[in-house]
Length: 192
Ligand SMILES: [Fe+2]
Image (cartoon, rainbow, N blue to C red; front, side, top):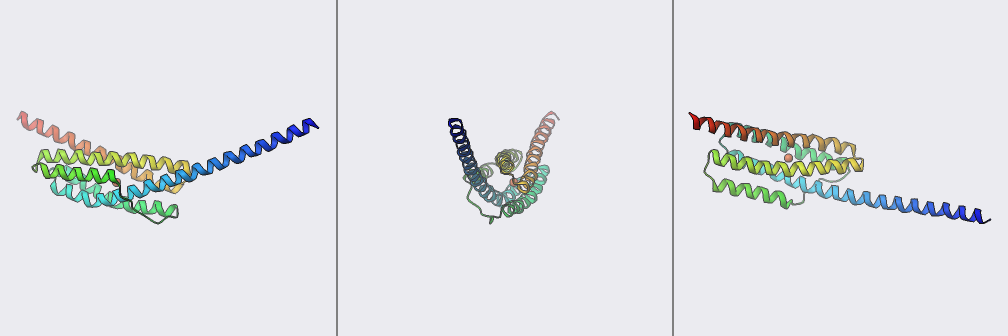
């Protein structure tokens, strides 16, 4: 009798523990989903703002390599806005932008750099530095978003976010290449 009682208690305790665990897991899932959506709205605003900010960088740049790198990334950025709309669609949500204060600050800083420097090599260096800060912010954001999407089991979103993350990393590497070749060019000019 006692054994029976204790067995049934153990079973119901286990059942409760299981229920508690699954409630906790579903709460964590919905909180992570909210975080994912908030971050998505933030980067959607940021990408849209960049489609307006990059042309200003192109206008102020002088190095043909820098102009080419920025122009090609502008086209990618326009496509990234559309890709984010696909991510929103993949989770059944309307594309919404919420002002990203961090990107707003980085864009403002880029504007100040361009205002303060004379067009030429120094201004190009300033533009590269500002653009790389932007890329690093985006790499961090897309890396997090991709990880969240993986945890949430959002296969389509993972695929889309991975594609953009690869473009951001390539854009960053290209800017480093432009910076290194500009420094080498100046050094060889000084030698001559
Ligand atoms: Fe981007």
